[in-house]
Image (cartoon, rainbow over all chains, first blue to last red):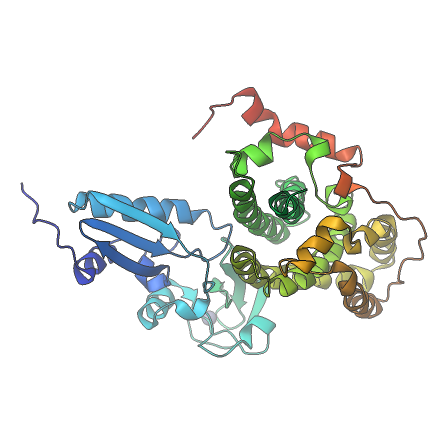
Length: 165
Length: 252
Ligand SMILES: [Zn+2]
């Protein structure tokens, strides 16, 4: 089997990055998560800049390896992954498609852009199962650094809420 | 000290607080009062590890002696650590852990808010990133202090004892010295002595809501800037550093 020769343009690299999933929420791609900050091509070298969601996020190393491996499997021999901190990642960077996929997966997506109310416990968080806004927080800290634990008072299901930061 | 040595020293002060406090929080793993709280403590600890890595990685580069974040974390003895005495104090009961956390979280929030304006771009970026996490930490510890203070007779008493027990370690947070001053003069650091009033005001508001009394404690202890620590740090380091020192090439 021969692979098509790698194309050194942003769109081609971007299409391959679409295959890299978030290891903690595998229905989302790293693009959906807003982790990819930039793609630079210098001759035959590909430089992907990524930004951590949380500074201690243990998935970052995994993601960085996945990106590198995926690109190498597609023939890109020279790949560099750079970590950038600024501007700091914010849940506003999660794409619309990412929010939709999250909801389908059973995680309540972070409150909409501009609304910081949910973070302060003012805006209701909608249950991803039944859509009810009659929900309450169980713990500010959930199964991973980026999630809080909620429960729905109508359908009684517990669920993860992706924190708004 | 040269400017570079001052900056390195300053970064150790910032980063070492995060390493040591995260190690203390990790000691709760498997024995927190409830599962949700265990996750919360581990998450806060994980945030602190992340902050520590960013800061110590930068410290290693500033020093330029080939020490990376792991080398700095695992191969320094107690007298070379620059964390506040507060954060190395043992966990005690849950109230002690929350008192320590509240004192530190509020301080770190004020310190990092000011560091966002640092002329040192790396410090400014790390501070901005960390602040998003610190806001959650502050809410977590203040919620617990209020809940325990305004709870049962026993929880109230234990919370008050915890606050009293650790109060004498807090003045050190606001001490200025030659390194701190040099960083302020260079536009890199923050004058921590100016944070005291705001910290006091926030603590007072939380304690009032919690029906707790501001500790009436006159003793003060300090020494971390010179590497003079309480005896607890040595034990903590012995546990934290054992593996990488016994098996220098261990990896997974
Ligand atoms: Zn529901």
